[in-house]
Image: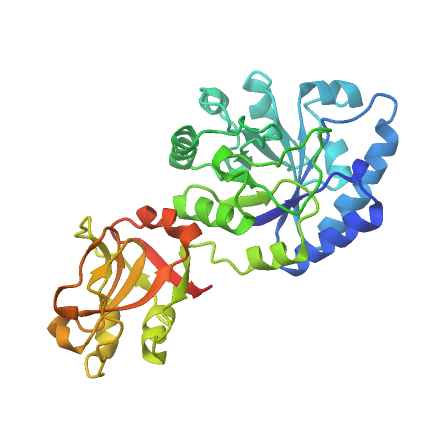
Length: 362
């Protein structure tokens, strides 16, 4: 699922509502917003402003998660054993940026409000195990990473993967944040982009999202800062969220048939993998009787090239490969039909045995 973030206390109401409408129009299903920035004495005003935006999102059937911590409960005079205040705001869930003791969280999952409890999964602790020890309603627990406004403070990739695998194995729905390069604000005064992974900070939002999809570990992808452009939202909505989708640049003299082989088929890597290429072999079955003339048969193929076996290649005619390391194109058996977009070539190693993938023309 795709999501956006809103900060109504920092935005013009009309702009916030229009942003929600735009996101909903393009299939975004959830909204993140923040209660951690409530100014003392301004609670009633801010809650009223936020409620207007939340109710607009709910009109579109969007999930709405409110970010908070134990101090917010105290500030609002709300007890953890009665979450109806947040339900009345229109929320579908609350996110705990910091923790209670595990028992409290478990009780929240049985609250009569029916709200989801989203836990902060950015720390590699036994927090979730502690909650589970108190026998919560696990169906109401979801997880979400932090975002990091300060440059060089986002999560390291290896750490992120370790945590994500842990929560996936425990059956917890996961969410992470990506950074819009056109949005200008988040909840805090200083914002040098908002993302979960530090390596994403300067990447375009589409590449960030594709990376999270390629990991196979993140269920929901949320744009953390506001307002992402219409172009970004549209582009994100067009992504295939269920498998790796690689943008390609076709060779100058590519044929329509070669384009069809690349774009019109569901591809998957063979299970018996090698270090030289990703092999999509089943596609060749559709071209057993077709003629595939030799075309653009470079003497050497390089990382990221997409090749198709031509008619001189015997039983390998029509087989599609993604090249993983430079090697000779023996006897010119393979047509170099396209190349993976340079900015997405780092996604090639995510294609494991039996991994499904598709292509899209850049």
